[in-house]
Amino acid sequence: MNPKPVLAALLAAAALGGAALAAPSLLPRDDGPSAAAPSAAASPPGAAAPPAPTRGVDRALLDSACAQAARLPRLRSLLVARDGEILAERYFRGATAERPANVKSVSKSIVSALVGIAVAEGHLRGPEQPIAPFFPEQLGRDADPRKRAITLGNLLSMQAGLEGTSFGGYGAWVGSRDWVRSALARPMADEPGGRMIYSTGNTHLLSAILTRATGRSTWAYAQRALAEPLGIRLPRWPTDPQGIYFGGNEMRLTPRAMVRFGELYRNGGWHGGRQVVPEAWVRASLVPRTRSPWSGDEYGYGWWLSTAGGHPMFYAWGYGGQFIFVVPELRLTVVTTSEPDLPREVGHLEEIRRILRTLIVPAAEEGGPVAAPDTLPGGGAR
Image 1 (cartoon, helix red, strand yellow):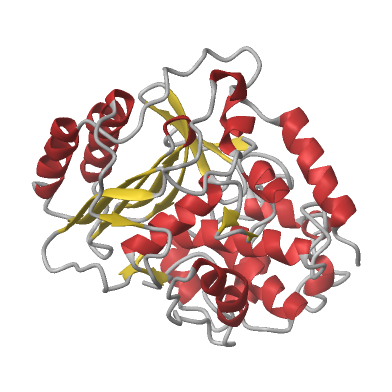
Image 2 (tube, rainbow, N blue to C red):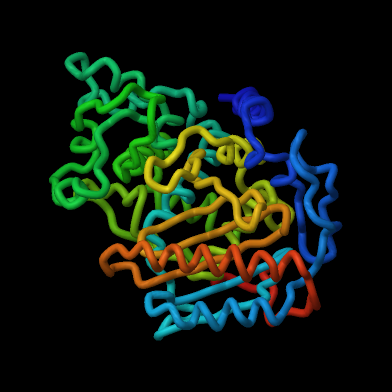
């Protein structure tokens, strides 16, 4: 299969259908601090011109952000990178740079990247591909015909229409004997392509599809297609009873690996002189396709879309306070990890967002010395 027409179509769809959050300014490659700063001309048509580009950060504001972060009892790490350089790296309450964190639903953004790579390699056709042929037993002639209309894109954007497996139904779903069958057996709560119904079952179906399409486990494919090119460690994570790697939860990454993944998307899928994730897939992933009924933030293919301090932002979000925030106009990537197994506390998430909005983003707007304690390129596999 020649994937080029699919990728060209994705690029065209992103260019025509995107809002400000899918701006072309997301994609120019930045191979490090020597790269030229993006100009105002890179902004989307009709958008306000970004502030004059700066380098580095205001150290007083960044120090204040770190001090306030240290007071959050659930927080385990805070990393701030600009132009690929880590300008702040703090670990709390026993967390370390070497210890992988349970990133929870940040896993969904990683699965999205794997789907994009599988499209580029010809294992999958693209977002419009129906999923039914991958599940002939579960979606046979007697299945609701709407289920046979579900596409890869519907799963990626949480618009499959299936009743969700998350929140109140999560425990029963992961306690079932067959997670794939259980996810597909859910009744239809909406039409495919309709409203957002957040469901980890959707992403687990993508993991099952990747396994069948590539002939490798999701972990083995991720290791070859993503972890090795990025120079990061991706330990094995839990599987379902049939041995399919959990497709939307429980991956383990170090905070530095999370920064590198965020930087990969900030640079349009480019890392170390190589196009790891197709640029067209990055664009398509950051096109708003639906909106959360709870937060009001928009959602693309496995990535959340919002603003921070007036700047467009996309982010990966895992339960409890696992975040990868990317603010392309400021060439800024911010990572947090938190205690993953405590009851939900909205106040903790709001505090993380407040520190980002009121201290870290202004620190980048102000700029300052570029010298940093560590640098991602060439920093080794962590």
